[in-house]
Image 1 (tube, helix red, strand yellow):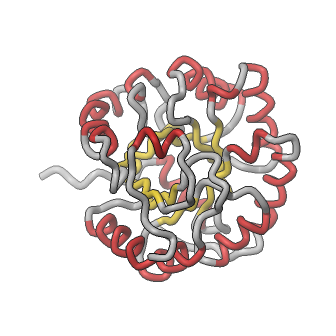
Image 2 (tube, one colour):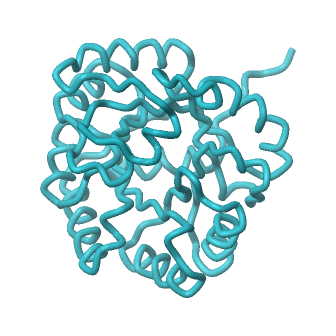
Length: 262
């Protein structure tokens, strides 16, 4: 009899890091960078003491994405999570260091983000050394319509309805999902609703990752106080003071307790 699939080394790293304190996960969109600026970006992240990052954007070029991965793996001691995209099958990682958020987007009317994208990419995952991490990518309403919102054609959870977020999270947990990513769309002017984060962290066993619109250390602290296990920070790092803010977020995260997931 075959055993259930084991948790992979990248996902184990995420949980091990969470035992110390909540994570700050920088996300790079390769389409916004040259090779030179990618190296500078990774260097700043490395200087901040961060060892796990996310790579990708809604329409990222596979050539640029591969370049970012190659630099991160060859020049820096980083582990990576990619997003599920139509070009994922063209991306090659390295065993034990490269994973993909194996993600469904509940509420999306674009079937690629429901089941089609998973099926179309499934046969390339192990062959391309990509470790699947079961996740959902759930949009809450931020009064914003970015590229990801348009691509997914999603119906977001109302901000004043944290109980819907909880029902969504419970359904995901019962399905065997382990990561719950709260999204608003890259560049969102509103940060994630803390009441939703609190509801999920207090009533599920999921690893909760709020994203989008987290632009200050105060936003980060609010997420961690609500019980977030990690945050994603992307667009904010493209500003001139972005990496100074990143350092402040990391320092803020270190003031919170660790948590065991394994």
